[in-house]
Image (cartoon, rainbow, N blue to C red):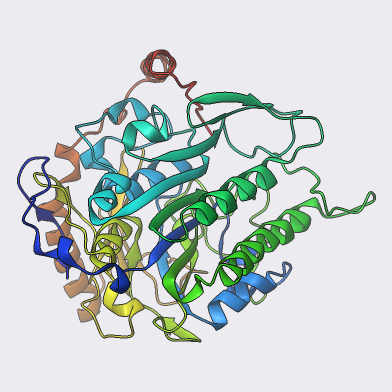
Length: 449
């Protein structure tokens, strides 16, 4: 099992004699990783949403495990990079939505190249806009990707790419349905093989538009989109049942960051608004709903309060798949595979968050910012009061010492902080250069989404 906070293994090669590679296929599950876009706590019923209903996600949680303290980098691009690499932003350089130019193979190794040697066929289905190149350049066997974020109807952008071939949406086609159909076709064709699917959904990123199920006079298109997202998750689960793959398939649903500005005020939980929103390093920006479902393995109706962050998915999936992590790469994640299997495991004691040159490290009770402010998280995710600098509270004093020691060891300032402190003009020039590089590589970089 992989549990170290930051594991370093030798340069970029997978050992042929890896004992884990001998893990029998029967002991490995298929893995489907569903990533909701801008889906925060207050958008999911089983996490206490006051205004939105998600019966299929709630059923997933009832039949599996609800993780209550999962944390994402609070913007689309950096959160996806952590999922794919298992590494913190200051290591990869993906510190914002505009820093995709920092990522190039073979400098970074993404999830499919870890899982494929363990026998998995892989697919990416959906959003890829803040990551560079094409999914196939990072090891995915098959993919469907649309341009930008929040792609629904052809009126926004009709273009998308399937396995390197550019396609154009018809006027009556709905991108989330195209993605679902591609996904169902993939798992049906590969039902007798091990498969890993990365499924970054379009829902519920803005601009919010009608769904195929929206009433002509609908007064709440946001609720309609949450309902349609939930419906698609349910249709996928039903297909796994039909193919007799449910007990053979680990399904994880998680939001990529918190609820977007303009929606967060209404996405309350038990009558309270979360502190912060997407784009902020506050609870509402990073604390995201996470559901794990694996019938016969993951305990039905369980709740886990362990700290989890997005770097943890790489070592967890490698652990479950019997795969070897890449050599010569520092992996920041902790495997929580034992927790999924109902064992105590070795939960992480702290996690690290970073965005645009600001960062913090936190444990279950306290958060220490890079500027030295200590925050009390006793009433999180709703309140984040600062601990007075002259506090006499021995727990707070001890927490500051421990968290500062973690920050000192990580030393994020010495990493890749290419946009930190840059003047506005310099940032604009860097963004333009990033877009040109991405275009030459075959992708139009989408910034600020």
